[in-house]
Length: 322
Ligand SMILES: C[C@@H](Nc1nc2c(c3cc(-c4cn[nH]c4)ccc13)C(=O)N=C/C2=C\CC1CC1)C(C)(C)C
Image (cartoon, rainbow, N blue to C red; front, side, top):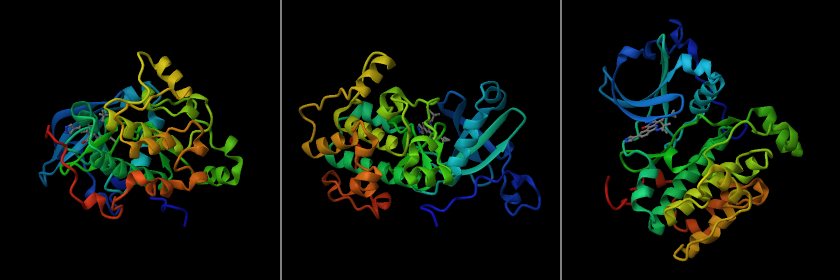
C-alpha cells in the first residue's frame, strides 16, 4: 500500500438512516456552546459541551453564506478532507460535522492550553530541552500529515496548540494542499516540475512562507520543514527569523535568506536551523534528496529524544503556567 493508507473522506450520508454511523451523528442542539476560543477569517472556534456526555470539544463554526459569497467552499472541503485523514496524537481530531440552515460545524479536540505562540511570546527563549521536545512533537506530526498525502502549508506557533498535558495538537488545515495519488506518482517520476500544480494562488502567513513559494516554484512537503526551522529558531530566540515592518519586506528577507543567529543561540540548534532554512527545497534537511524526515530525526539536535514514546511522556514544564 502507499505510504499512509488513504482514509475514507468524511462520509456525509451519515444522515441516511441505513448508514452504520447514523446513530452516531450529531445535530446542533446536541451541544451547549460556550466561550469563543479564536476567530479565523471564515470561522469562529468556540467551546462546545456534548449534552449527553458532558465532554467538551472545540467547535469550528463556519457561516455558509459567507463561505459561498467568498468562493471558499473548496477550502472548507479540503480542510474537512485533510482533517478526516489524520489519526495522530499531535493533530486535532475531527469527530463529527453537522450543519443547520446557517452554519457548518466541525467538532474537534479541545486543546485547553491554547497556542504555543502564547508561551513563546511570554517565556521564550525556551531552554534547549523544551525546544527539542516541542520540535520533536511538531516533526512527528508533520511526518504524519505528509504520510497521509497532505501538506499543511501554514505551520506556525499560532496553529500549534497545547492540550491539557502540554503535548501539541496541530490545527487549522484551512490552507492545506492534498497530494492526490497520480500527482504524487508523477512528481516521483521526476517530472514534478509540471504535474504538482504550483500553489501560486495561496500564501500562508508571511513570516513562515517558504522561498520556493515566493519564487512561485512547485510547493511540496519541504515547505512545512522550512516552517519547522522558523519555529525552532523562534522558540530559542523569542522572535521569528524573518521579521520586518511589512509583508513585502519580510518576503525580501526570505528570498535573500536574510536572517542572523543571535549570539546566545545554542550551537546544537544553529546547525539544524541552518539546514532547515535552506532556500532550495531539494537541499533542505528532510527533503527526499537528503534522506527524508529520518535525516532530521538523526540530527544531533534531537539527541536523546525517544521518538516512540514522546507523546505519552511527561512534557517539560513551561516555567510559568498561564
Ligand atoms: C487556529 C484557530 N484557533 C484555535 N483553534 C482550535 C482550538 C483553539 C483553542 C484555543 C484555546 C484553548 N484554550 N485557550 C485557548 C485557542 C485557539 C484555538 C482548539 O482547542 N481546538 C481546535 C481548533 C481549531 C480546529 C480547526 C482545524 C479545524 C483559529 C485562530 C483559526 C480560530
